[in-house]
Length: 272
Image 1 (tube, rainbow, N blue to C red):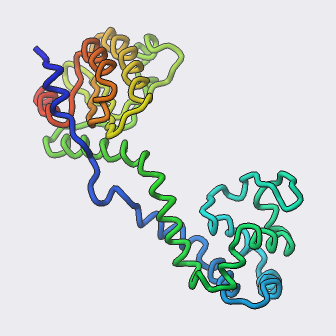
Image 2 (cartoon, rainbow, N blue to C red):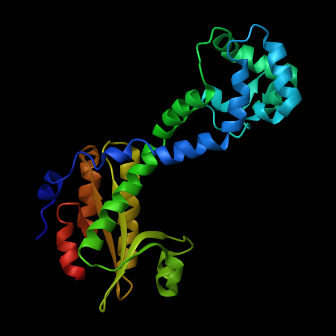
Image 3 (cartoon, rainbow, N blue to C red):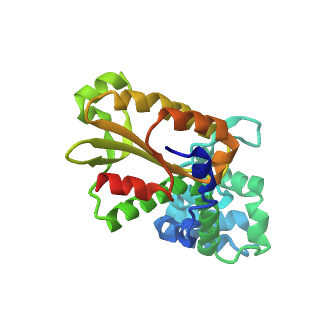
């Protein structure tokens, strides 16, 4: 008999290793993509005549200014709406289409003073720091990928064959019970007797998302399990579930196959 209290006591505080925090390969690639433009813009640092510096760059390669949104930690491909000095709502990259617009951007954002006072020494290094900060916002997405990697690693070590990111439309009889929704499963394991459709996630913090996930899987699992030869499996972990204990307990009573990173060994034994 499954013990929900034991399941809760096994939940881990984190699944984050040291390489979780920053993807420096991606950061470096983002900087390299605009490095030449940043090097040109460096000529504005320490200038006593900002207009002249802007005009010099403009006459050589005006496209260099198109990367300036990243200097204020905005990565919107220039499509962010802002109010200009006249109070008009415009798309940010419109400011980079004229010398006057570039000057308005530099003065309005405060970058002009940073350049004049040499508070910034090199825009390549400066943008590397900005990209590092922006990359930290991607940690939430990485958390899910970390859990998938951990589960994949466990399966690999145990010689379990699997496929990742498989869509429900692959099985017409399964899709029929799921209705119009096309469902993507994180893992699929096919044995001689059964096909296991697996979802994995990890929550170190609480929030409404946990309740939504539990409700969703509580709805999907009985449908999947009603199709002969198929079983829904949910592998989840993280102390965030303590804030949604009741909803998880409800799901635990509905979904026969729920595992965490501790008792996943039971599932591995089952599929082997």
